[in-house]
Figure 1 (cartoon, rainbow, N blue to C red):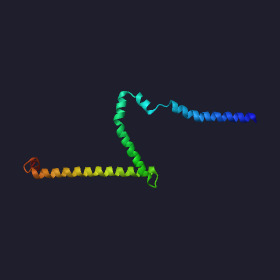
Figure 2: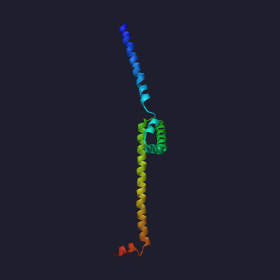
Figure 3: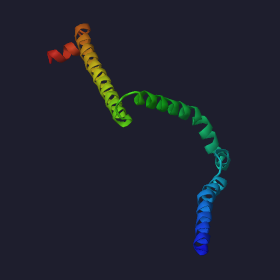
Figure 4: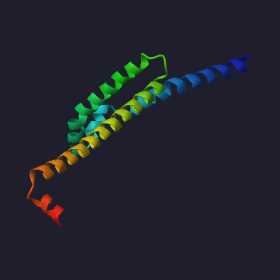
Length: 128
């Protein structure tokens, strides 16, 4: 009985050592963000500082979208997929509108050229 108790205590002590010592070792060995930043070469440091505001803004926008998605009763990934689909449709509609505008402008320019140049190139091409 004494041997079993001693073995149980050793196992508990070993388990606690692993459970507490493992994360403590990782925390001790892992460098902080500042230490990692100091290890960058100067060019990377400048680039990271220059892009920081845009990354923070993108992250803030992402978090705002997640908050909006979480207000729905649907899962976040479903709401996000619907939002992406809606955005793709808006982009496609905008491209189509621009394309239609360009075609309309081309026709207007051609009609304008036909009206303005009675003795010009368009009129001479019609005589040939």
